[in-house]
Image (cartoon, rainbow, N blue to C red; front, side, top):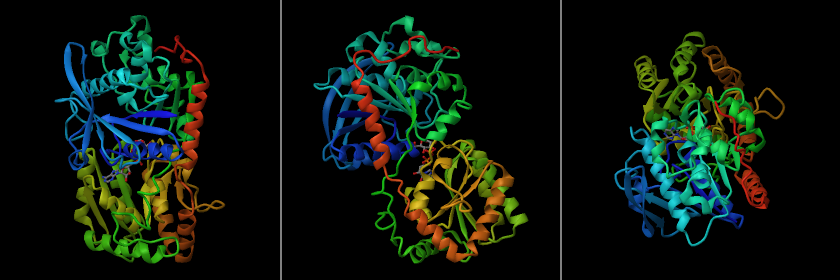
Length: 486
Ligand code: ADP
Ligand code: GLC
């Protein structure tokens, strides 16, 4: 089976978060099972682009409205990522340093999607499945199905995976001219609450929709940033498939970012070496438990509660632990976390920014990883942490709920709490300190976590079964033309 993944991110080419990790791993594991999985993404100005050698495989010309542009598709020569990687170059629109965050992101990602379909339309061979990820590629199922120029592609099954439904790419109807001419009777397949909503359109038009954990799918029917009714209506085509982790990149025995490797047998000494490095670099106390946070400093991750939770913990519990924060996001949260540095007594530090290498050292050297997420579709951090013997302290939500069992329960290993609140976080910190006093138990929990299997093996099978189901369905996609309108 040939599958083409279309995504805005793919590690190590360009990554802003977990989407990149997933798209950098899933195709590799699909290929290992004998399928042909490829990735198409925008050509940003990244180090990976400069460091590698590329072949030009296609040159085309298309338009968004009356803006005509040339695009070039290039392919990495050596297949070093374990799959064919194609980048779409659209001069002036995609060739930027960051993935997102520009005023013209709507035009950028619409142009990318139009170019991808335009290229697939003239490709010598067709993929069996087009698998799109998140709202940046959510218009592709519509374009294939309802844009006149690409009608001949409409029998190719499409799958949309939702990594995060908070972001939907909403644009006004005044932007409808950006799409290639389409059947205007089908406007409802683009619309949600009087706007064009690429994520909603993807949910309506894709043959199947997946979310990155089972619990997240359940939660979306109650809370989906305005799309709850759509998830309820389309529940028949939605499935939750838990992400895996790339166990070749994330392996404490040979992690290329680490100097001190360790296995289950040497976890205590191995972690201590990485912890010592962190404590020396960030002026922390080695003897106290090290609690870290790694991630985007945004409300979804509960990052705004961290400053109060940390101050309250020092106040109510005492200075019995270290905190080390790595992340960037809302400027106010960054500022508050930086301010706490002034009060540090060799027990607090923060690194504002993105640092892949430091993140690996933190997963390896920390005792605990704090994730007080308000929304967590899957979460990869907790799975990386567990593979490195770091105990996750997570809020019971989405993928966190599906992957972490509290150590108080049978066969448990983490610290789980119900609310993203100062009280619940502080209480979890108190529990972490209490557990740390029992080193024998800590070692037992670490070993138990490191034996857990979060590899892609199981999830890849679920995706393949889903594609196979689609390939068996003949002729038309089972899209409900009367899809719910708001
Ligand atoms: P999300 O995609 O919502 O940000 P995930 O848990 O799925 O959350 O994945 C986050 C990924 O991004 C992990 O690989 C994590 O290590 C990484 N990450 C997040 N913030 C940073 C940062 N500031 N520096 C390095 N890596 C980071
Ligand atoms: C999103 C989610 C995160 C998930 C990741 C990969 O960014 O916020 O929970 O792990 O995608 O699917």
